[in-house]
Length: 444
Image 1 (cartoon, rainbow, N blue to C red):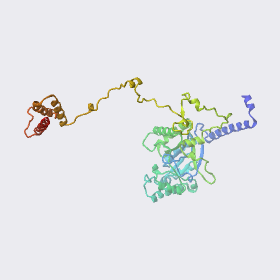
Image 2: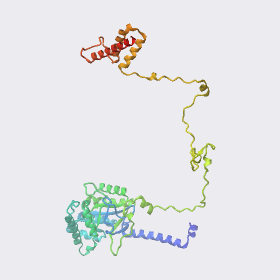
Image 3: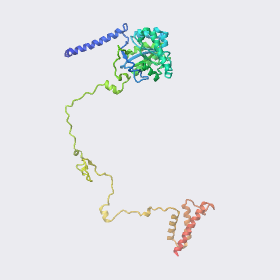
Image 4: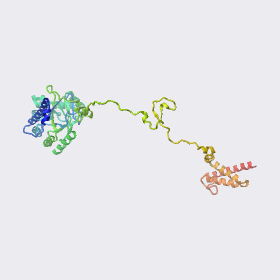
């Protein structure tokens, strides 16, 4: 180690010593901020924001949130002051040297003005939360909404007296029931609208242990952000010491937010800092190391194979320039003739002998259709094998065949005297007899 330290230059040693001194000084200052409480979480840093540049924050409702780093938390409390519980919240925060932001209701400030002055004296930021905390601001007339906002600000300023300039231009809509016209009015007045990044549900009828569990679990899911609590709730008083202790144990840091003034300008930030989780493009450009530029020692190209090296047919290929049509090409090889089967000629010896396979006659495939065609064929065969005396037998046979071809067999040729079968049978016999008469005429 001594040899390594000797190799370091004088300037480098001075820089290292200065860095160590800075770290020791920062640690000592943090410890000095909370005397008598060495295990306190303290306030890590103060963030100065300009409401005109970022008028709406909190990812529960808006695209932007406070520009916090990983594992940084902003504590906020609504609905006070209520001395019984709010004073206990103030004592817990003081014991941990934590600074928070309070959104106070106008009528509560009128009832307990001393509670407002205690917040300012302790160094906390104080904003407003309307005059009467209506849960209808998302659909109430804009004139009434303006009155709620303006009266709430006037009541808190009245409680502060001559120190009314200490009121921060921060506002949280009751119940987070936002409306665009309300937000536009607040922005026109230079007031920043605060939502939240996660809740602990401490206004519900749940145990303090449940409040603690929800606060830690949801913070772990987000990694950082604005926590919304209520200083008027006894369950919040019971859960807050455990929440602060667990935040310190898990490496979280408390950030205090104050408004920008001509004497105290806003903390420099980048646009992506106001996103809870920046996009991958922003992360890549702002946090990931850049790829270094390489200098190549050899910039020559490797030898490429010639077309002839790829000719696997040993010169048997034909290029476009050798195409049968005589077209000029670019030396691209054409494939061989396709190998699928083609009609082959007869062997020379079979062709010389005149031998060929027998071809069936066309009449083999002829199909005789209809009753008359079938009857004519039957009669013609009978005439060739019989004489004139057998014409009656031929006629009877023809009639029987007609009934069979029609798919029915009737013993007497008729089933019902006036039915379709009788007419068909008579027509069949008549046609056969007419044909026999024509045969006799030709024989004569």
